[in-house]
Length: 569
Image (cartoon, rainbow, N blue to C red; front, side):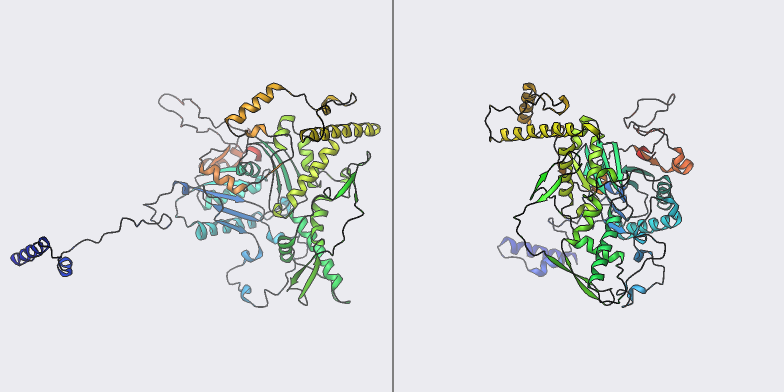
């Protein structure tokens, strides 16, 4: 047999040397291992875990809000999932009402004594109305769904970066940490607050974060990644949604036939209308002339007499769950009333509001006034408006315009009422406004150089006068422009808004960069002492300490003896 095979090989080699190509049968007869083409490469997404080990998967980034939970991995720009809390996600096993054709056409009514949108919340800040066991079950079910359906992770414990609202009650923090440590066996959890993460997601170090959430609006001043001041108000998404339901009920009752029962729009219908067609009116200073009065805190606006009248636009809104099903024709201006009445309420003077019910622009202004001068200069030029309601068309522009009006009217004087000296104070503010207007005209080349707008009258105090021009500051500014774009700290003194990617994107960036947080909780220490094991210091240095714990025993780099709750303490 060996002789026959050798003859075949020699014959094929002889034919190839003489210029005759070997037959296909001769090549196929020789055994050969299959080869993978060099251009083919296995996808990194579908590769095996052993060949494609991602170090980022050791961390999981979670954001907990009052109505949702977001989750994903570090280094990603968007979360893998956003899980809301609603009645549909709280069904028991064997509940098949969703497959009933009549169930989707039925309008859900809230129970007696139940607040607006209570079924869609994870928790309420009033702990007297919260069932902590139910909150824990809801949260555990959402996290388990995220792990098994969206993360697709193995059973290996993962470190967690948890984004929480500031000033969250300790009972809620304890319940969340118990579930993550005991049910999901996280080795450590890093807590970070929403305002700081929103500042990071905007690419800033200092900002004024206006978080228009579900239960409240929180205005936080962040300076160098530290929360220095905050104020809050109840004017937020919950109150806004309830006001939209009242507007829709009034419109439905107006178009209904006499004798029919009053309309009762459900929470789902009001939220859908608010999300799809709700909007905010722009500031009225663009097409109106403003008349100032010393005794009033807000300007008196007078419309132009020669305004062009056009028919108001309308929008058709279907209500299939209404009895009978109908389509409502609503004026577009009516859909802007909830935002006007709840978030701003311009017709009411500011001294009639409670401290917890201030309109948003007044709350932002008071927060800026309470800040030191250098911090205010940084924050007023970096106003970050975020939250679920912040996506409403026209809302961000309206807040910035109303804030500019307040600054022009009151300046930065913390005194609210001047009593008998109100007229004199208004004259000083008007003089300052005239000087600023002349300065702008001079910069635009509208007036001659002979006029000096910086020459303020003698009655104007030094705090309201324009600072003198320093030649050294001009040289330093020109030198910095030669080296590159201006630094962040050089921009300030004007009202300006900055976009942000949200708190989850900031947490993803921080976790991806392996930045150590102030609040880092280890599993063993938490299971031993709970929140009582935290120290009272709100800030702890994360610089590695060069200390020894005895002969031959050294502490690890950056290891902490105790942990703290930071802003949640």
